[in-house]
Length: 454
Image (tube, rainbow, N blue to C red; front, top):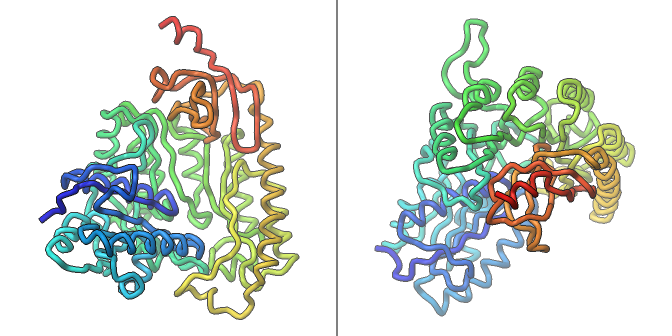
């Protein structure tokens, strides 16, 4: 039995993997006859796809839940679903804390949403957090964009970084077959999607769990092999992938990216700390020297490539000198973009139990100093675009200026220029860059005249 008012709303917290999961779950709900509601208060089914990477993301979920739990006390047919990483981590504890929740489901269960909801509509309160073999993606996602799309290639993570909760909540690595990935991409190409981002929590691990090796003992399926295999999917102009791990990032992969024309010149490779001792305590499995060698090789083979990364400050026991090694690495490399965070102790991780926790004041001070440096280096990196002609894939209207459209360069720089979104959405436009900022660009379309005439 399905609730009579079939409107749903999904709120997504966290990473690209969560966004991809939300799109798949939206696809399942629409197959079940639900319609999207922009306003959560008008929906009869609310789904919170949660993130537990930092404490504040978790607290935000509880504040949203509190509001809707009150609403449910007056509106009995409201269905509340908590999915994602907080759901996996907290399990039944969530039900004790917020008894109004109907379904708690971990990320591995995203493709089982219909089956789990049927149990809810039969009057059960359901918790699905047990490890399972992930069901293949058979539902068509309700994608947020008509131009760019995510395609999951590997779920889970086998790494055991001492600060990270992901392996606990997303389970062990499970790669999809190359055939299943390509079939999904072919379908996206037919639907008019121009850019696809291949996703994995640790994408460089792709294929290690699939059967088969070459006579030399190399895995038959690696991310590099996958890029060659899917490169020529018709209709798709651009390929990206994320997130990479320095421990497994190979020269062979860099050479493939340099060789394959559709693979964009943009790499997202988190380094987390610029200090070897901190990296060791984090169990990252590489040194800052190895990280620098990877970046050197990328810049040798693809001099203009954009590099983005993630960094954590204030890890337990981090000294001022060790933090300065992170600043040095950031200054030396000059990232195009850097996601920064102060260390946040997560339940069930080794580092959360260590004695040498730093004060919030120290963490906040270091984060501020790092962010200041990031803005300075990103501004310097942006200068190379001034006056250049860049290929921009138009994704949307500029929400702050309806006269402008926005899209991304191959190097993943957000770029704005004058144009009509109805005419240009999904088009690759050559744009002369006239203004640069630390994280975005403005330009003039070179094809504007012929576009107007056409």
